[in-house]
Length: 396
Ligand SMILES: NC(=O)c1ccc[n+]([C@@H]2O[C@H](COP(=O)([O-])OP(=O)(O)OC[C@H]3O[C@@H](n4cnc5c(N)ncnc54)[C@H](O)[C@@H]3O)[C@@H](O)[C@H]2O)c1
Image (cartoon, rainbow, N blue to C red; front, side, top):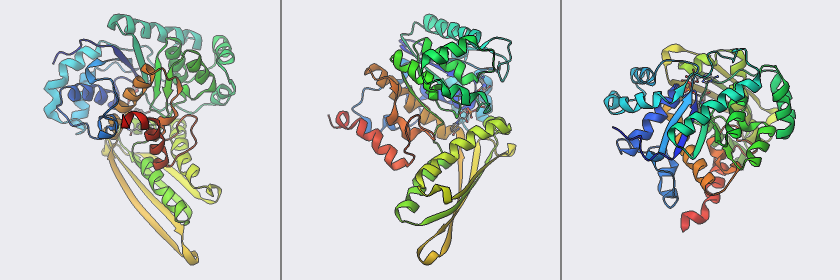
């Protein structure tokens, strides 16, 4: 299929050769040619059929990765792990080869150890973004963070203290400290007038200084950490205990992951970032959270591949202080839970941008474990906020 024509909007993926990235790229092509059903995509549902979302053929992908293996190699792995059906291989291979040319190896190590100052790293990223825009003749680019979970470092606390772009900019210009890569990429993106989507637990546009920059440059952004599986289920179930006035005593979660993300999370500091994001949703819902004993554990179990398994044990107290428990096991294909959300988010952000909206898009909260600037974690409440935002356009 040859369809790199009439492209108007660029989607530049950080971690462009990862599982979610590669499957997102493939899915855009398969959706365009109606070879797959848009299962899991709210933007293709009857609820939003009146909204003028970007069509699939108008998206051109580019991006960066620290790995140099090709997208076709990623596809092989996705087929081997039964994430993408083999029957699609011949349909998408040429397309992947073309998109591969737009994915650069900007930096080669993790964390960024290329002996460049943060300021120099930002300059390098901007150069690649500019080139992507020029070469592909794009007016608009949305940068999407789909990179590995980065380790939590002490510098984060300091970065959160800069409450405007001017003070953060001054710091980034003059420091030689290690700065998390999501901050480097996000700064470069916003300076290059790109919208920003953070699907990972990384900091990115959560920093007040970068939120300020997005507002100054009139750019929309959303994040962080896609709510795809176990946390989604928790934020549906936890309100039930609250509104039935049953007291949750303990909520224990044990996650096993066998994909690259699982391997990245075997780093203790990266795991900290993910656990922080997962546990906070539950605590926000259960108002008496200080009394609740909760714990999230994550282990890397290679044989599971992309089939993440999460076991939960909820110990609670009902009438006459009777103690009971709920136990459930969630087994999901991690990548295929994430991809429809990424595609939806790209379309929602692009539409917001076209409509003149900028700053953090609060109404996209149901898509995230830790929605930026939005305290509500209850999934039903979050979905009502999304629907309320579009209420008029849905009835028109
Ligand atoms: N699958 C889900 O349900 C889900 C839900 C929420 C969040 N996420 C997050 O999405 C992200 C991607 O997940 P995945 O399964 O595709 O992981 P993956 O490991 O397959 O892909 C991540 C890619 O990022 C690249 N990368 C790492 N550091 C980089 C850097 N500094 N610059 C550029 N590229 C870099 C890696 O080389 C890899 O290709 C992870 O952070 C994960 O935590 C996934």
